[in-house]
Amino acid sequence: MAKVAIIIPARLASTRFPAKPLAPITGPDGAAHPAIAYTWQAAEAAAKQVGGEVEIVVATDDTSIAETCRALGMAVVMTPVECRNGTERCAAALDGLAARPDIVVNLQGDALLTPAAMVEAVVEQLAARPDLAMATPVVAATPAVLAHLQSDAAAGRVGGTTAACARDGRALYFSKSIIPHVAPGTVPVLPVLLHIGVYAYRPDALQSYAAAALAPLELQEGLEQLRFLDAGLKVGTVLCENPGWDMIELNNPTDVPLIEAALIRRAQLEMM
Image (cartoon, rainbow, N blue to C red; front, top):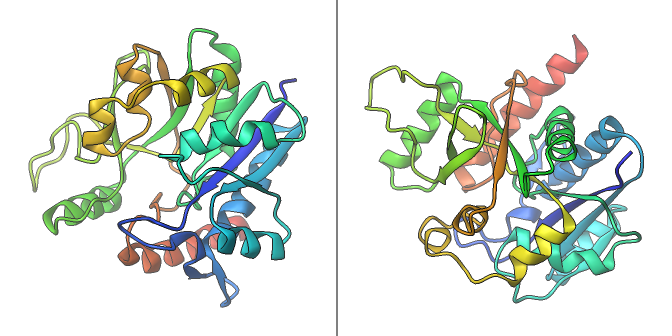
């Protein structure tokens, strides 16, 4: 069984939502906890589902995030402030891990609603497909999530990420716009695939990525995974089932009440 490291990259200086890893999120218990605590819980659930040797760490360059995480019992690896995105931060964290992993999972700090099964799915795909440099999950956007994306777009907010894929699941493109295009008020012929902020990489591919130059499309979209596609590397997508709650990332302050509602919905489903 492959050795797996789940790394949670977290930074304070988000332009859309400063200090979002520490943003208070009220859970089903009625208590507010920092957003990063929910992501850690998601990582722990994923580690149980993946099985075998799984190490979990938060990778950050910020002492306030590190202190909060350590106070809550989380392992932390400090990384350089020069890391330009979560993937580079994961690469920088490799030397701080207890053991060299076979597969590295990047569970982004703003993807706190990620089900354990999705992490397991990308690990399994990467283990089974030696031709892939990276694997990442997508889900068919529910009408509510599609409406949320369209609302963000109409208001000029940058919301979730969508993906366009080949018939074999190979990623063709990722965008902060809704792709393929869906005219307002129409039902899409193809499902809009919402990209979930989880990546599984091979350590060598991760280090090669960090050493490569920034890709123009990566800069244009603000999406780190486009550097893999620009370099001609294969990125696999795993179409996962919607878990029963809306998969909304913490991108903007307006996402907080939606995420809190999703946490309640998830707790209700777990009790059934």
